[in-house]
Image (cartoon, rainbow, N blue to C red; front, side, top):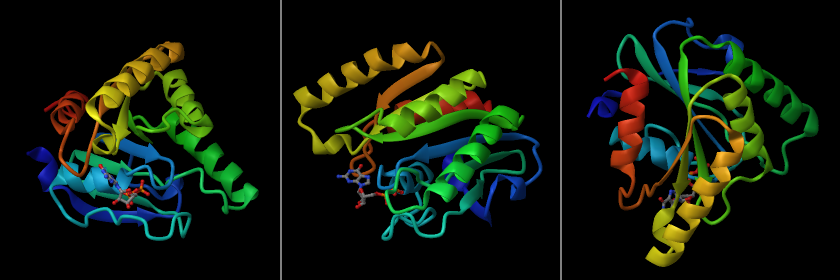
Length: 196
Ligand code: GDP
């Protein structure tokens, strides 16, 4: 897989410190604990590329993983952690909005949401920003292995129904980092964005 080529490039304290706005990048976002790091590790076939969060809300860095000289994965800090001070939350929201609006190399946004409670307020806000910026969104319903088949399908249908309200290019798939469910679908969407 192209994604197993991923190599850590840099950690940035904020969006202004990212690498040059060239080539193609795809960003990953989600509430703290949604399973973003686990999903990145599964996608890249690397056990500890993205560090799974022991302490949610600790120093928030943007991590850049290069696939090749032209393509990279952007791991955005998790959001929604209650103990982060309001001022920092607002600052982060502002810069995230700007990033989605202004970053030319950004070709798509992956939003990771726990299948048991998708589309929380901040998830919705983020998706709205992406749609406003005319960016395609891949919503992954993470930890899908935690639900039995019937409930899992019901959650998927409900989330797809809910995604229509954004009136944008929003695709929803199941995902499990534990057993690989949905990895093929996820890669198909990313392949398209990256031009593979
Ligand atoms: P992050 O904060 O979004 O990066 O979330 P992590 O990847 O650190 O995962 C948060 C917690 O959920 C950890 O305890 C993971 O082991 C667990 N987790 C993540 N993905 C899955 C999954 O697909 N299935 C199950 N059962 N647990 C998962």
